[in-house]
Length: 199
Length: 90
Image (tube, rainbow over all chains, first blue to last red; front, side, top):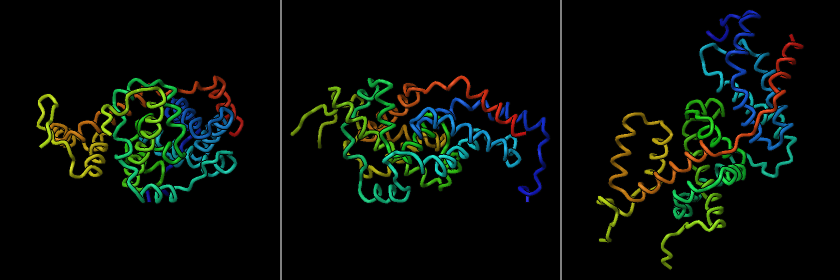
């Protein structure tokens, strides 16, 4: 009922919301877009599209609610609907497929247990970035939302249209996969990943 | 029993339910468990070596992601061109 009854914003109100609540997130939006597309022009287009849509559908934005989450949701949907189709990325993995695959066995702890906090702390920004970028887009996305942008599970659930339980488990798996990547760097850099070579 | 050489160490060396414990720790680290989470975590870290190590690794990963991940500089003309497009669409 409230959906239907929400009043329309005046032209002044629209401008105020757009400038005051939407535009301040442009840095985060662009960074998210770039990490999804890996291309400056695509990222620019994606952000522009998102802001155009945000303006067009501004009446469905409820003032006082989380504008950043609302914008991220639009950006994510635009990416899936338009950019993902034309993108040349080989990682065209379906959400469900990914989930089932990684659910099937314990990619969990065993394989990553010898990565040490100390070696992670010593890594360079580029190594961390590259490790993140190497993940399939669905896993990359949850890490960006949680760790880079600080969204809560609940906000992420809304942005991604998935249940909170799925957010939690996908994030858990994403971090495990990230650890695998980081372990690769740690080893190639000669960091100590396995303190006592027992066998 | 194996020797636990951790300082102040009564920590057990094996965790009986790694997957569950680690997921719980991760939720706490993500700030999803509020005050009760903090208490629970203290208790776990004091008692369990694998949980202790996992916690520090997970925290290090969150820290480096937050602080070191390179940010892509936003093209200076982007904000202006968005405003212009909005203006034209009105």
